[in-house]
Length: 43
Image 1 (cartoon, rainbow, N blue to C red):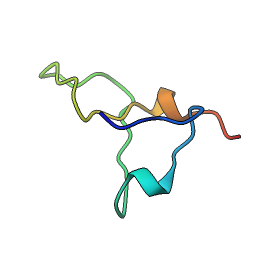
Image 2: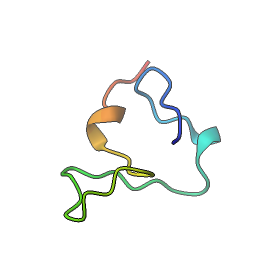
Image 3: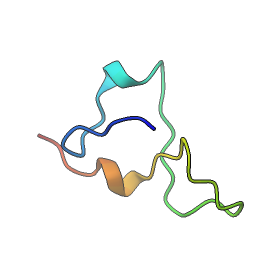
């Protein structure tokens, strides 16, 4: 699981891009899922 620092996307923790999900995956996957709601705040 990747750390979310202050609900802000830290480019150092990801490679070239990040995909953010709006809804839960249909297969109930929990690991390596980045929800948009986790990255709404900007410091």
